[in-house]
Length: 225
Picture 1 (cartoon, rainbow, N blue to C red):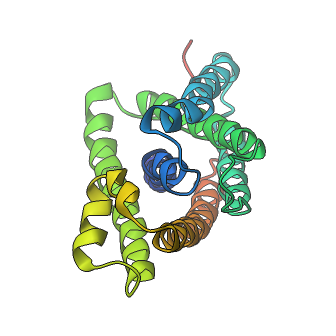
Picture 2: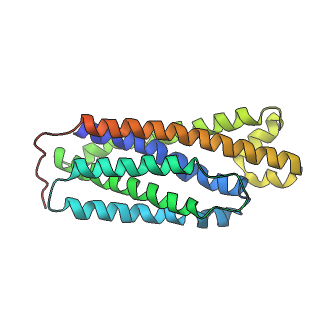
């Protein structure tokens, strides 16, 4: 099961990092929010992950329901990523965006809590498990960021100059110097790239769910109180 925990954490981390890093950019570019406004719009995602972790810990306190928890949580993350692909590129932020953030955050929080509990039980000390999982988080973050940047840059070829594309990846302040036509093209390009990346996340989470089923234990270990 420790291999399952590592796999699920790595795959979920890929989806979570893509959303948590790039959704503020989507709010700034597509919805034309200020950096502070984009940060406030992320509160459902950042706050509800803690609730998911608490919920998972509560149910795992007395019984080993790790498998059921991972199946349910992986399904929530998959559902959240899938629903986010339905967001439009209109300037106003749709209210359903916040609901989708909650669904995704609950799933991520439950997965992190369940896999951590499983790692603690399967390994004598917590430190070795961190050595296993931490590099996976780094790989997931780098891969998710590279995915969206590559798709975004490809969509902007012919719309902006290479200098403007590189500057936009560093700071969104360059948006103020763009013409209305260029700004609309940038908004559409980022929205399309973001949706395409989330579709990749849906496939990644499907593999995470498959990894959970492949790692099912016939006789689960008893969790210590």
